[in-house]
Length: 399
Image (cartoon, rainbow, N blue to C red):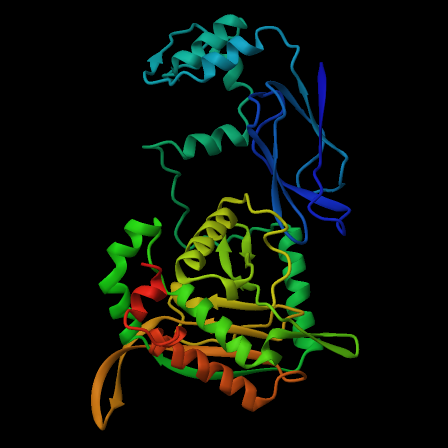
């Protein structure tokens, strides 16, 4: 039986997508739930999986726009010996052996794995016939094998490479230009002394990890501090809709994540109702899903405010760009030991520059400065994120 595998819909407003890359070749034998291809839309990257065991026939080409619900490929599950071959492919090939053949090119020692040898014997194929049909994919695969190195390019060689821009990259580009043209974006800066927060993490890291199963990072504290600051400065948690300003009574905070496919912003819902442990778990979960390419469109939708951390790449200072239609974005940066004045004395402290980019049409300068100062105060004094109590730190961490 021929099974049609169709292009899934990334969202209601999207009618076309691109096949970013096929993960299998035409005619390959595949198993049920095996990843077949990655598709890119203007909002997200999704994976097409095989609905059954069988032989794949590719219909849609890479880097060509195709309609949602059109046929991407077909799976023929009626081929004879398909199941036997699939079972054989699942067995690890640990030993390589050399096959001598009168048809081999002179002076070439052809190494064939036991699985490949068996497949050639079953189909009466000689090694020379395989060699005569070598493709770029075979060469790429060989270059990725241990011990095989590509020949170095001649020194001083001048070359170029042209690649089509992905749908995701196109959409990001359009949105970045639109932000610059359609908002009155400004940025204000401050710096934060992380001494107390770093000591807090050091004191409770092992206990926190043992109880909650995740490491205690910095992002959860900044998400918590931003949530409290958004309550104090509601204009930062708003958006323009026509001639109206919409104020959100909740906070859904997007956390920018760099992935192999580009920047994605998973959204942590209802941060006001979550403690540090829950925030940390949610951040790790969604970041991992984004990097693995399995995040859903719903997990990327919405968001009333965004946090981005250029510090993981070593950025000392930057002006983050707004994530429309939001009116504010908080930028974190690298932690650096610097001399600062404390009580009239010069001391070395772990410092971080922070930036708030904001839409001046909604947020006044005093509000932007006040918001960032609120975040600074909470991060420098983490226990202030709670009502005063005898065990404020342990309460904060859910211990």
